[in-house]
Image 1: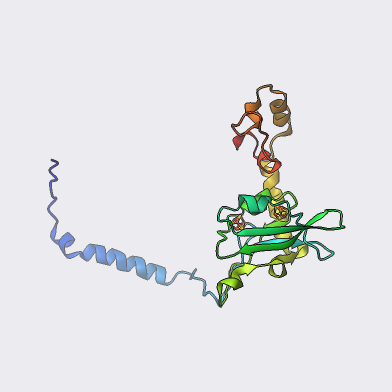
Image 2: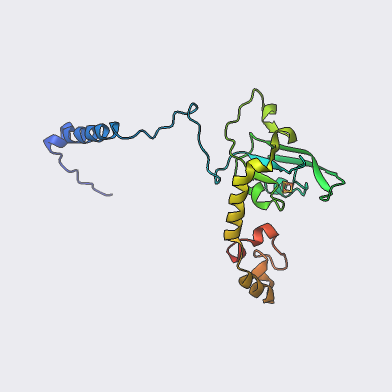
Length: 205
Ligand code: SF4
Ligand code: SF4
């Protein structure tokens, strides 16, 4: 058993005068400071390129999706929000999504889809206001997801900068490749090479 000795409070402490005065002084001091509260929704947020809004698909100059329907984003998406049906195309990329849907009610805006995409075809937008009357309104198809590349330039520039920062040192990669034991390049599983998207983290992954 632990005995706790109770300290005897002074008269001032018992009537909370000092504490109330300190609280009032703090309130009065802050009343005249510049207001930092944003009057949303009249005052909109001005998102920075690092902001994670909802994911969207990049549309090239010809109006086509840059997506090659590889399915990597669908595979990594933690809440299984993405569904893709691929089709063939006569264009250079050969495959393209016939159906590409993201359930925005499931999406947690984690950005994994953007990270794994080998084509820079899906990026986090600056869109954060989603409204709808039914669940179906939040299932975004190609008609809503495609956004011209020019509008997504700030985010694309940002992710390229970040990828460069995380890219493994070429000298370090060459040394790792020359090591005969496979554990260095296998994310802990001997004989299995990590995907290119993971390799950019180098040995720190
Ligand atoms: S941001 Fe995350 S949750 Fe949303 S679609 Fe991409 S991987 Fe899925
Ligand atoms: S990872 Fe990129 S290229 Fe592959 S399906 Fe997703 S958006 Fe398309």
